[in-house]
Length: 529
Image 1 (cartoon, rainbow, N blue to C red):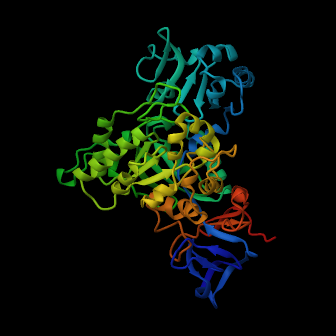
Image 2: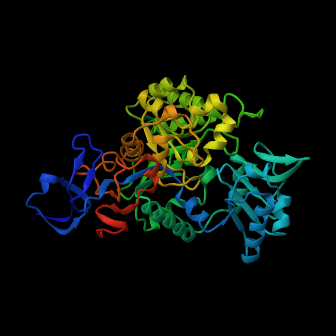
């Protein structure tokens, strides 16, 4: 037998407890066929000397937004604007150099002390259609030229008014009002955006990613967005979450118990090793940056507790999806939203019991102590974004206050209660690099150095598990990826230093020298030092 590839002289951390360390790994037809002694006397078409480099399973990002991230790379960016004048100056300069829509990202009202308004945008770009997406994704701001495209003045929850007139700011579900004017994007545009974001993932050592929401909701780009993923030649494996709203009433046989489905009855698990269908996603609340995450007690210095979605309506839709065999992914950041998520998954399982539904709570951002045993009992997975607290932790800690700040994006308490955790990024809301997130999980320090919930620190091994087997399990792909085990896909990340040996403060800076998917280099080089 002649293999396709053998990587030797490596320090391989397999994340497989049955065989945790190895020095050689063999690959054939894109899969791992053996380790160490399994390869004695076996030849290969390509033999790589890793020169002592560290090989770990390819990182798995369980919650990301590739299309949004890729589109954002070509938009005007307000990140770093400290004043309103600076922000408007950036928009004015961009408007002078472009035709059509002026797409803006990186908007954050917090440094300005107030939200921008349509009048602000009109001064910067008179008569132009300016479309601004909040950094959190939970708010949009538009100019008067965009509002004029609406058939009637917008009203309702989430439409911000002043003296009875819209300010141009739309929150949460109301963002869909103006999003409908900007979308759909052409498939070619989406394909290029997705490919651009996937290449960035590969450069960060990510070999599998879950796109967290197609078909509706806050992240809709096109009603045929899944086709863009099918057409794109992506270097990494991709799983697609589907908006719960995309499931339609179906006249299936009553004995099947399926009342809502995608056309043709497709559901979680459909697809192949490169592109597959994941969970059905819905949104229960907003975000902490936009102050719309649903809390049981107000944000410090405020009288608002955020916004909670229509739980009764979502419960019925979620129960129908659960009965049809879907995995559920419930966006819940605030503790009040987590209460709702727990009630939904408990109700779904009580009405329609089935083994190992493996439902997920996306973000699971603020977890009260009394919720920990309930999360364990519900057997949900907490899909975390640790980099949020690195990037935004100072602000989040300030608005939560000293009593609640330690509850944010927990680590140790979740693991100690037997609650599985999965690593993810929510790209492009925050930096998507897994090593950056792992560093925060181990040291619990924000970008400024502030300790946030130091009692929630976990080990390097546990953090790496969250971004390999933990995330793979959350995506129901643990039988294919997540560890370097014979039979699984040959997905590796090659590092220039050992995460278990470098100082914690240097973990994020460990170079990714190569990323391998199915035994093929998709980033970097095998070249030795």
